[in-house]
Image (tube, rainbow, N blue to C red):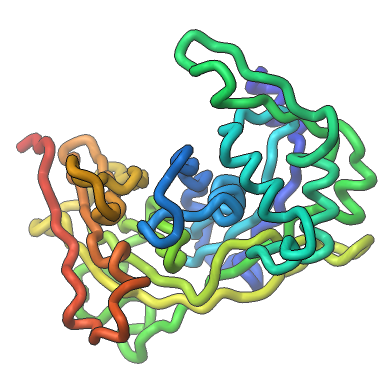
Length: 319
C-alpha cells in the first residue's frame, strides 16, 4: 500500500544538494528519468545505447526551490518491468573482455549488476494483455532495505551526484541576467531530457521560465564508500544553455510541471528530431521541441549560434 511504501521504503536517499539546504530552501520536486525506447536508434541516432539506457532509467533527479539539482543512480525497485532486448544487450555489453570499457562499468557497478539485473534466476517473463510475448521481463532482487539490507547499506547505497552550476556573475547569480522578471521566483519542476549525446535537464519556475541545462558528464552509477556514511559523489558541472519564457504577463502559474517525451522520428525513417518537453499548468499546455539536442553529437565543432533554437507549440490555453 502507499502507507507501507512511505513508512517502510526499500531505499533511503539523503538529499543535500552537495552541501545541505540553505535558509528558506526546500526540496521542490523529484523525477524518475524517462524510460528507454526498446529497439531505439542507439547513440548515433540521438538515442542511448543499451548500457546508457539502463543507467538513464535507474536515475532519480531532485531539485530544490532555488534550482539546485542532485541525482542518484542506480535506484531499482525490488520488482521491475524491463524490456528484454535492452536487458540482453546490457548483459552482452558488460560480458567478456570488453565489458570493463562499457559506460559506468567499474567494479562496484558490475558487482551490483550481478546481484540485481543480471542475477541468475532473477528474471521471469512478463505476461499482460498489452505486452507482446517475450518483449518484457520482470526482474526481482534483494539488494534493498527489505531484503539484504546490510549488503545495501555497506556496499550498494546510491551516492548523491550534485550538479554544480556555472552561474553568471551579477544579479545574485541565481538566474540569467536576461530574465530579471524571474529573479525572485522559486523553482517548481525538473525533468531529465536526454542522456545522449549529452546529459540535458530542464527546470521551471513558478513564473513560467523554463531553463535547459547541459551537464559535463553522464548519470552513471555511483555508490557510497563501503561501510561509510552517506556522502556526495563526483560533481557534474552544468550551465544554462537555453531559456524559454512561457508567460508574458507577471502573474504566476499555480503549478508548472515538466515531463519529457521521446524524440519523434520522421515518417520516412532517419535520425530522431530531438526530444520534447511538455510544460503543463492549469491554464497552459505547451510542447517545447529541442532539436539542437539531437545535433550535439554531429555538429562537427559548429558554433553554438549555428544550432537550431527551441520551438514552442501551445497545445491548450485558458484565458
